[in-house]
Length: 285
Image (cartoon, rainbow, N blue to C red):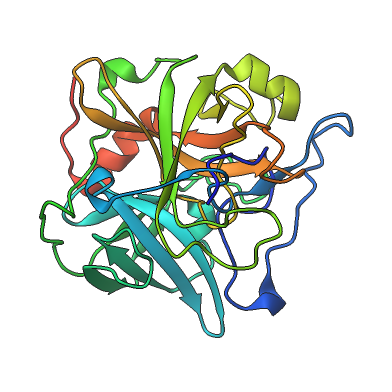
């Protein structure tokens, strides 16, 4: 995974299809002008760094299955019973194979299979609005040094713009647009959060709503998310030094992962009440 997020591809951010006959096609939103970049669902981190599992104990690998069709996404542990991911990663799938506690894709410390996913009731698959979902685990996941949850934003952070602040994205996605394989190891990239006005100038204000935030690589490093990273966490330390998930990988530019275009994320703080209502997680003030 190169830590360069692709510009917004409008196909499901991270769904890296297992069956090549069912690869997600690019969607050209009707409301995006020709002068603007099309968006595409995200894949894998480009130009990023290999991670140590202790750095990202909240990272989850998700293999979504529906008959002979399948896809790969990322997710995050937010409680011992729930994983947070993107709605485009769960919509249309019946079963989810989850891997926890390892920086190696094929060697998870713990695995579970869930058939219980909850997409946001107002999720729109074309515009990717409200691209957020929860997967309920069949058993409580046991916390260890390698498996632990990430904090949700405080209520006081709901309106925080995070502009120019550093955030880190992580996942097992592809390293480049040309790659056909997922990364065998967890990767991460440091990104700079940009303002929605700047991002909307690239993609469209109809896509970049108040419930979305965007980030891009620092300088010319081109680190970004790529195919297979969808649903994964964008995190940063808050004012108390607590690592907090502020975004969910949602989309990238149709140009690909290597051009330094911004990537788009569901703004987690806008959905705190919905998350808490379903999971029972108490919200921080």
